[in-house]
Amino acid sequence: MGYPHGPDPRAPGRFDGEAFDATAHGPAWSAALRRGTDAELRGWLAFALSCCDTADEIALRHFRRDLEISTKPDRSLVTQADRAIETLLRERVLAAYPGHGLVGEEYGTEAGDAAVRWYIDPIDGTHNFVRGVPLFGTLLAVERDGEMQVGVLSAPALRERWFAWRGGGAWVVRADPVGSAEPRRIEASRVRAVADAQVLYGSPFAIMDSGWAPGFAGLIRGAWRDRGFGDFWGYALVAEGAAEAMLEVGIHPWDLAAPLVLVEEAGGRMSDFGGARGVEAGSVVATNGVLHAAVLAALRDPARHGDERSGPGDRPMSQAT
Image (cartoon, rainbow, N blue to C red; front, side, top):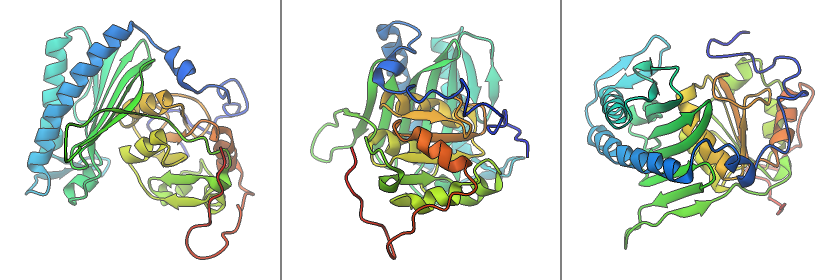
């Protein structure tokens, strides 16, 4: 089946050819993708964090309150909070950086050929937001010359925020009830076997129905543990080392732009199901890096059945570093 958001990730040669490089991950590799000075990227980051402060206030003002909910043509939901946040962020970006472009979920692309573009997902996890589930957040990323440079994932109901910039590492800030919150550097895990991995995903039925991952069920059966933690939170857990893989389909560029920087700066990897980097293909595999090839191979193998679990619940996890 084709996919409306980008190229088919099953295209021949993408996994076996030059599109996949098993060594393409790690902090030094990610730092080499910097397009600008560290001071410039830090400036963009400081501005993005300030924008997210305001976005958080708007989101929390509407959370678990009466909402105006509309259904978009793709059957996804949108609220007045989504629209208000994106409108504000677009205005602030253009006021501060009038030559920059915008790519947003609700209001599309503006100045799409600009060298620097801002990707805006005003509320990632809108369906959680409308149902009162606190797993939602604003995603903001900066791209220069086709390469993502800065990413912020802000989850106000969780009181957590993740951010990263090329060459600057990946960080998390959590609210401290007894004092000021301090950023803490995070990194992906070093688990080297699928049998020891925690695998996360969005909708398992969407992944199986896509036709892109005939080995998905086998991958899940062979993993130590699996959970359906969709949206931004799955990528944050991979970046923190709390999980080893996150899988989704039906995904858009604004969903992936900020997580891409976070995961890669944490030492992990992100690609589509065919192994190619980018945010346009409509599918995504985010891993701790060392497991990326194994996860991709498992997804592509229709004969894979995985290891049988030893009994009900989770298998014991052996330490693999």
